[in-house]
Length: 116
Length: 107
Image 1 (spheres, chains in turn green, red):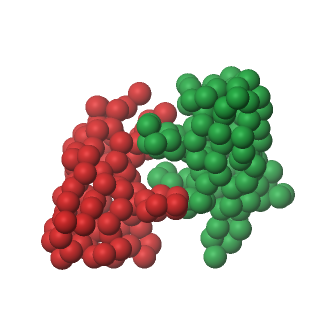
Image 2: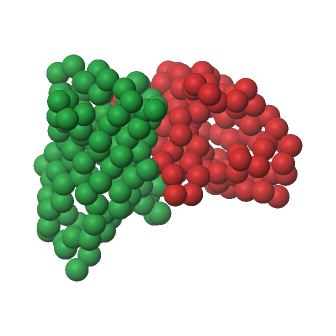
């Protein structure tokens, strides 16, 4: 079964850091580009970051540029999102999603809350 | 950035009836448009890609149409499991952007 499982969410203070992980199974992870997408009640779904399978080219949303870093470890079938300088507006459910153009496989998400 | 606008924000439909959801892009996205379904507590599920191609396992009652800036998702005969929130997304340009969603509710 194709599956993505996110972990690493939690409560963090403004200005703090957090690292999210996404474990992939059921497919050849190294052959697919991957994304992080977040969802808040107020702003809906927001694409955050992308990493290409072939050369690890990265694209980031302007809202996270310079603060979030996407990376992958193909040997561990894992995707990561290192988040720093966190703000209240980064509070959201974070999903990892596989790219085939559209996002064809999604995880169930992990919740990040930025609050003092 | 390409702004995706969905209408209506919510739709009340009786089971067995037809539902028509719209999505408009602020500039052309060609046919690089996807539709997703999301139920409470779950991640979105891909329904349609390329504006009109059903994803694997998606029932034929779901159909997509349009190109350029105007797109439509039609659910021909709503089943109980179809009551959910539906999002469109363009994947023609960076940053990828989503519509704000249409909630399909039971009438």
